[in-house]
Image 1: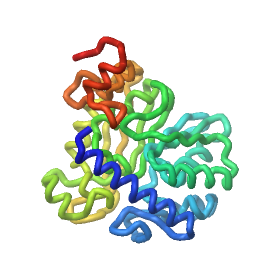
Image 2: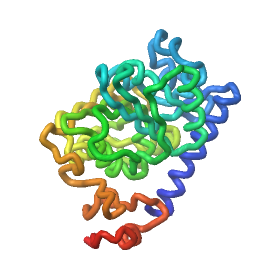
Image 3: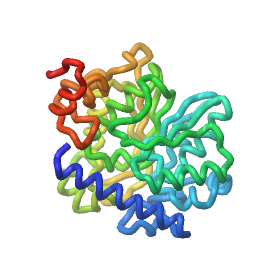
Length: 297
């Protein structure tokens, strides 16, 4: 990972750590210019009143997203669900209610303050079929073919390595599994520079992929049945969108079509143009050398 990418990830971590602390102290948090600022494009207003009322106030206050992925993922009783960038836990808790006691909802987040808030919210909600894991969405701490559904709420746009996110999502899904994601997506005509003019990275704008880039990234990871449907504008030429896709039922459980999360070599998307070290403190070469598995390609 480049120094610039590392710095950007740390900026995101600090921003959402501050948002978690603000909620813990009685404030609110959301994507946007300031952690406590909310509007109709982001946050808990995008959830139905009965969903909000059924959860701890702190989980609702910590809602940072641009949509409601649990409403579009068509979760079923007994399924296992993973929320990428679970924050204060609102989507994990809603998922846990939908999949019932025979199912399970996982959340992964890199921010200690958010994980502490999510665990407290799960305890207040009395949720016993949830598990929160510390990790990044580029290197998910779950075995391959673990979950039926992957959801995420306005987090993938924050990643500095979206190819790794798509490859990891494909890896952890069981064959036939699916994604139901809410994210910010840009019109194809907007350049990265024009996206940055409309908002910063930590505000969920500058890091957004275009519609074509999103489709290409999912397709390269091995997904099929890709649908990207805009729901509402969040900036000029930028949209909150629902993204759905499926891992083919005959897919290799450990690899995408053009990239893998090859933990043998300690490298995401090993031996592809998008490979990156699973440990951000190491280079790809160092990760391969340390793995001892003989991968040098």
